[in-house]
Every structure is written in structure tokens, then in C-alpha cells.
Length: 159
Image (cartoon, rainbow, N blue to C red; front, side, top):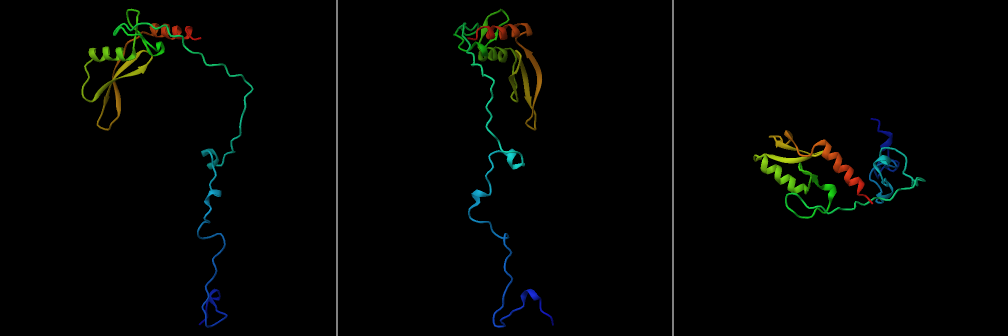
């Protein structure tokens, strides 16, 4: 019977086992050197980030000079004209006041809500069994002309 040479014993009293290969088995206790990525791009093998300093001057941000108009619906001052609406009669109104007016005019069911969808339009949205929202009906509040006037009004009042 021939024994495997790996397990052959030079000393017959003791049985010897092969030594573990280097680099296999448990990691060293100091794992901080193994993972030192700062971005996902580096994990994917991309280049390390470098500090970039542009020579293009950055203009200062302009602030809106508030005209402090009164709301056409509640009569209180509008603190942020950029988040207000132009009413059909030409006045200004708070976002929340406009939303309440639209909710009064359009009854909402249990699984429905009214949301602002942009450019002066609201929408009646409905949630289905899967939890997805769909638009049932669009509700225009500001015309495209009034929306453009309001946008230019805000731009004109920037300092």
C-alpha cells in the first residue's frame, strides 16, 4: 500500500499535516487598509477624484425683492411671491389658498387627492390597488399667459 507523499511522516511517532498556503484563510485583523474607497466610481475601477478649480467666475445669487402683495382669498400678506399664483381676476394668492379653492370646487373621494403638477396646473390623482397614482383629470388654474407673466414678474424683482 502506497501512502500519499503529502502526508508521509519522517518521524513515525508523530503524524504531520500539510501547512496552509499563504494568502488563504482568514483576513488580517486590520481591514481598514483593504477598503478605502471614497466614491462608487472608485469601486467600479474609475479614476480617483481630484480637486478641480474653475477659472470661470461664479455670479452671486440674486435675491427676490418681495412686493408684499395681499392674497386675494385670505387677505394676508404673501411673503414669497415666487410660490404664489396669479388669480383669474389679476390678483395674487397663496399656494395653499388656491389649493383649498380647488378642493372646494372639485370633491375628492377617499383614494383621491389633488396635486400640483406644474405650470399653473393641478390634477385630480387616484391611487389604485397596487399603490400607484394616476391622473384622473387635469385642473388648469393659471393660463399659460398668466404663468409667463408671473415668471417674468419674479425675474424683474430680483436684486
